Image 1 (cartoon, rainbow, N blue to C red):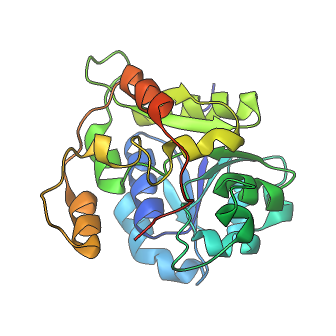
Image 2 (tube, helix red, strand yellow):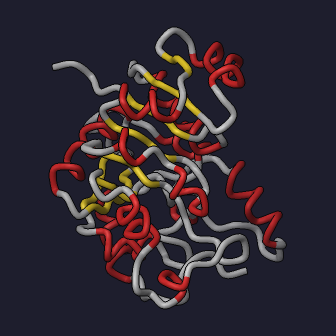
Image 3 (cartoon, rainbow, N blue to C red):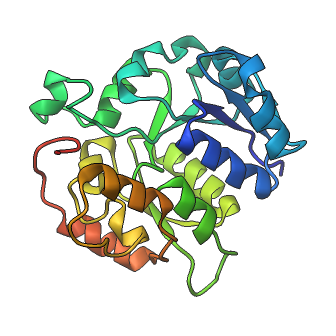
Length: 244
């Protein structure tokens, strides 16, 4: 069976980190951003022979699974026609201070349900939203390793959840199936499963910018599947998004 081709739309820290892990794991990666393939020459060269640059539409067409690592505010700019029928990983998180949605503020929808509404013909999977790229590069382990880390996945389509679980297994991670997108708030910001289990307790007294920087740079802490399940079950729904 051939390995899946990973498409990455958006090459900030999340997109570039996931592309690095995928290339290191032996997958072919197609990269794109809003500025054009010519701006990705350096990143493609750094990733090696398994990576190439394309437009977002070309990336969607070429890939089996597509990571849309763009700000949530830009989700309506994603190439809907080309992503139709594709499994789409949504790692976005809602930041009300940067962009507001009444549907999210009222808890009518989760952020990934909003993305799924735009990508109506795609199979959206909420994943890679609660772990940073540094930890993604630190924590991968072979299948069966005693300290293998698990990541939560949410999707309305069970086959899409299975496809992403298979991809993450290749990348070196177990997964915990947490059900449909309506419950994806259980692993979003302001819940016990968001970020900190994978980095440990931060130093006291950090400002918000310093805390974000600390999390981004902190070495990864392994989190087994049983702990992911426990933390998800303990989550209580509060205000949506990052609350500064």
